[in-house]
Every structure is written in C-alpha cells, then in structure tokens.
Amino acid sequence: MFMGLVKRYLITTYLIISLITMGFVGILVFEGIMDEGSVDAIIVDSKGGGHYTTIQAAINGASAGAKIYVWAGTYYENVIVNKSVTIIGNGTKDTIINGGNTGDVVNISADKVTLAAVAITNSGDNFMTCTDAGIEVFYADDTYIYDINCSNNCIGIFLNYTNRFAINDSIISWNQYGIVAYNSNSNNMINNFYNWNSYTGIILYLSSFNNINNNIISFNSEYGLEAILSDSNIIKNNTCNYNDDGMDFYSITSSIIENNTCNWNNYYGFWIDSANWNYFINNTCCNNDEGMDIFDSSFNYFINNTFDSNRWYGMYLSTVSNCDFTNNTCSNTDVGLSLSDSSQNTFQWNNYSNNRNGIYLEWECSSNTFFENIIFRNTARSITIESRSNNNLFYHNFIISNTQQASDQCNNNWDYNNEGNYWSDYTGVDNGAGGRVAGDGIGDTNIPHPGPGMDNYPFIKPYGWIYPGIPASAIPITITSLPYFANY
Image (tube, rainbow, N blue to C red):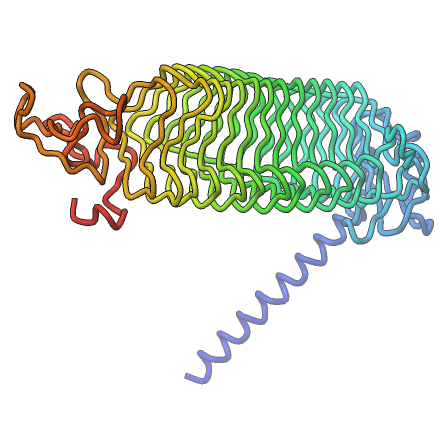
C-alpha cells in the first residue's frame, strides 16, 4: 500500500517536472534561442542581445523567407516590410512597435508576409485625411496576421489593393477606424475584436469576396460594420452591439449576411440602401431605435431574422420591391413592419406580435402578398393600409386578438381563390348561406369581415386551409404556443 503511494507520487512528480521542462524549452524556442544556429532565423533585441537592435535593420539584412524573432521591448520605429518575411514578437504585452505619431507604424509592400504577437501603436493621426495606419498593406497579397494588438492609430489596419489577406485572434481597438479595406478582395477576418474605435469598426469599400466571421464589433462611436459598393461578401456570426448603427450596407450585391447579432445600438441594427440579390438570414436586431431599415433595394431574401424590442420599427421598407420575407419575427415595438412606396414583395410565415401596430402600409404600396403570417395581440391595430396603397393581397393569415383587427382605406384583396384569413373575432357560421358551400370550414355569414371590401371567405378555425394529411407542424411557424390557441 505504502509503496504504491510512493510510486504514484514519483510518477506525478516526474510528469510535473517534465511539463515544466517542456514549457521552459518552449519559451526558449519562442525567444529564438533554439533558432540562433539557423541561417534564416534573426533575433531582434532592443537591449543588444540579438543580431539587431531594430526591426527595420533586421528586415534590411534578411533574405526572403527569413524568420525574425523580436524579443520583449518597445521599438520606436516606422517599419517598412518590403520582403517576404515572418515577424514574430514576444506577445502583445511585451513586444511593442511605437510609431511616434508619424506615418504608418508598419507598412507591408511585399507578398507573403506574416506578422504576429506584437502590439502596434501611435501612427500618424492627421484628422483631416486619416491615411496613416498601425498596419498598412499596400499592393501586397497573402499577408497573414494573428495575435496582435493594434490601438491608438488613425486607422488600425488599412488594406489598400490587397488580396488574400488574413487576420485572426487579434484586437483592433481604440483607433479612429478599426480596419479599412479599399479595393481589396478575398480577405479573411476571423475571431477578432474591433471595439471602442472613434468611428467605425470595419469598413469594406469597393471590396468583394471577403469573409468576415465571428468577430466582436462593439462600442464604436459610429458604425460597427459598413460595406459600400462591395459585392459577394460573407458576413457571418459577428456581434455588433452598442454602436450608433450595428451594420450599414450601401450598394451591395450577392452577399450573405447571416447569424449576426446587432443589439443595443443607438439608431439602427441594420441600415440597408441600394442592395440587390443578397441573403439576410438568422440575424438578431433587438433593443435598437429601429431594427432593420431598407431603402431602394430589390430581389433580396430575408429569412429567419428576429427584431424584438426595438423602439420604433422592427422592419421599415421604403422603395423596396421583389423581395422575399420569410419566417421573420417583429415584436414588442411601435410598428412591427412598415412599408412605404414598396411593391411586389412577398411576406410568408412571419410573426408580427405584441407591437402597438402589427403591419402598416403607409404610402403607395402595391401588389405585395401577405400569406400565412401571424398578426397577434397588437395593441392598436393589426393591419393598417392608407394613402393609395392598392392591390395588395392578404390570405391564409392568422389575425388574432388585436385591439383593432384591420383598417383598409384603399382597395385591396383579402382572399384568394375563395379562401381568406383566420380572424379570432369572426362570429359567422359555415352553414351554406347565400348558396355557398356548407361544411368547408369557411364562414358563410357576417361577411365580408371585418368590414366592407374585406374578407369574403374567412376561416372558421385556424389552419383551416391545411389540406387533409398535412399536419400543422409542417408549417414553419406555429400558433400553438400562443395563449389564445393553446388547445389547437
């Protein structure tokens, strides 16, 4: 028994010592000691313990493909990287490159440069032009940056005609702008922090085929992310909270905006202008002034988005056409969905509940189709149609327990192929009155409902339009969770 305990103790001690030893060797390798004999390994130490005391001198003396290890210290210099080298520091708390408030701190003009484990600070800060950056990558491709801290610069990182750039696991905060991509394509920005910048966290301008994934972009004074004249980008899994706007898009096409969270922004979760042929999927915009505003846009798809507890609008559309809105939720706001001068859009399986107004067609909206939506418990009106908004179609909707079920001051259609909507306040019966068909689940008395020119074929029960053999569970949205329909 005693010997067994001793053996276990000795084994445990050996493992601990081995781990400590391996960690020490790892430190030595990181510091560059293990590479001193290598032709391609260059040590920079500001205290004189390496091959060079400045990073620039090391680059000037390096050949293409060299690895430059920068030991702990503050390096007051403006570094020009004009060779394909790898520069690795001793960590963002220990290796600091300080540009002295002049020009770019690091300017990369060669392809295939890697930069890691350094802090970069104090670029030039000309407020009027703001062209100086912590890192500028200029006409250079295949740059890889990871584990850096880029702060107190005019622009944290400036991509200028740069392709296949990649950055991950880095902090780009407390700059005027976080990262700006200009005429730069096929870049990857993954797992980074872009916070507390004076203006915008990420800007894409004339930049396409970029992948922006899993970043935190919050507490910026203007926009979290802004994409302008930029196409075919994938923007996924990002958090844009506590900015003025979460994400702004101007003149974008063929992009996928998916699984982003834009909450608690001062104005808009999403602002979209002149956007065509894009997908907005599974995004969340809550507790903003307005959830998503869309202007002058066509042929977009909005699927499974959530807009909850915004102050004025869940979604606001102006001059929007030929878009599909499917399975979105707009709840707990002043107006769940508002349309102005918008036409030929389709709204299916959406939920407009617990707002003051559910759906509001306020000005010259035509030929929009609303079917199989839930409009539930809105405290003023469920659906309001005004100001020359004609030829819109509403059918197969659940219009339930609203203070005023609907108000239509124009000429619209409330049924299609002799099938209308389900209204919780409809009191007519399905008895074949007026030569109609008895027992078909459609009311034959007290029509049209709720008033002249409206639904001539109201359903007696919810899901009355589901064909035999198709369960209600096959519909993407369900009303069974609503208190009114707990028994269906």
